[in-house]
Length: 587
Image (cartoon, rainbow, N blue to C red):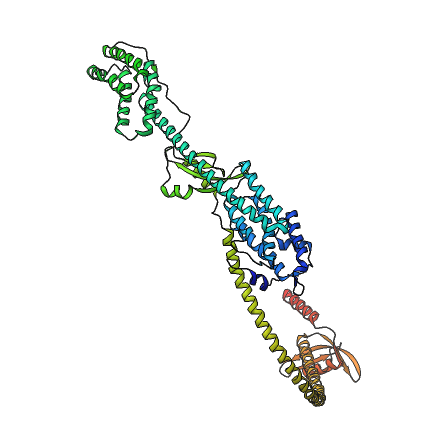
């Protein structure tokens, strides 16, 4: 991991008030004060946002401002790519102040694998990843490590020396924690596997006895034997002999015991006699210490004699045996499923809180998963079906492996190196472009001055020519307007004539008009319309012919005002229709 020096000096971020002139020493004390205040306030925001909220106009040297930005980027990436508990988010976020302090030192100006704070964070990565509020003692120990880091960061003068001391302590502590947890887990695995085998063996023994004895009536001595010495024998055999010939023998003997003492009258006496001859000897051979079963075996001989003789002996119903543990073998995980979950950390979500547990082991004997806390102490023992449901319902959510702070720093360096290089190349191009543009500008200014003088003379000539053209254009426009007015008057005249002709054509016989005759207006009635010659004949009130006017002439008179239509003749037409109607009725 190389130095960040070139990145921190060349990177330029928008909206930063970079101070390019003053030295770093002028800002060093104030900058350390800012970092200490950030640690004291413990704000839920990054360094850049915090400083801008307090000092929106504050300017800082490039190295210091970039140290804030890069520290934010590293810690934000570290928190985003890991799934630390929520209680650690703010304490972890405070470490960005230490990163900024390391990078702002002009003697260092960067981060490396051996930077003390990076070493400390790397040592604690695994601890942070599996941290939960419980167990409380271990949780408080981790929180104290944070408190120590905060205390160190608030004393810049002794910062690096104190971190170096803490590195030694942490290395010893984390190694001790890891070793202790491995020892605890080893003992726990051994204990839980043995206990699981014992539970599974007991369940199998109980199942075997219940399989043959359930629902039968037996002498009380036989029931005591089955639920006592014989159950103990089967339970012990189940630890090692469950798939052996010995277990098959015990299975057959259990069936034989129940059959021999049920007292079923339909049994073959010869078969019962054959069983009775060897049964007690076979049972005795099963026990190493026969003192605990001699009394039972002597009673069995007597009871067998009674059974062979057909003598009725007292019997009671067998009560089904039970045990506290239920062995669920309905479904078992395959090897791939086990490998995908064992030795992995999970967040266990309950109603009250969320804690982290390690799936420490799969107990094949009982089909259970063993869950432990960060101290290696047993947290839960879960049947496979329950464990699977927890995974499916996200009650247990996988915690991804730690994304190392060193890898985050390396990725940040690679990414920002490209950005800084691109920005530096862009600035060089901009500088060269600015110098070229300045030279071109000077040349253009001289050319512009000469051109301006020539253009001034040219504009004067153009102005004179423009005035002449304007005068000519004004004249043309005046003539054009006069022509348009003339055309408009002609169009209006034609429209008026057309409308007047339509009015004349709409006049019906009997219509009254007023015509000027010898400078006198006279009321006349339209009596005749001759369409062939476009003539209209008007009469006075006496019916005497007074005027004969052509259609065009009447139009001219109406337009000039020498004639006026008083009615359109509709009344006359209606009257004529009524008269004609009466005449028809009279006929």
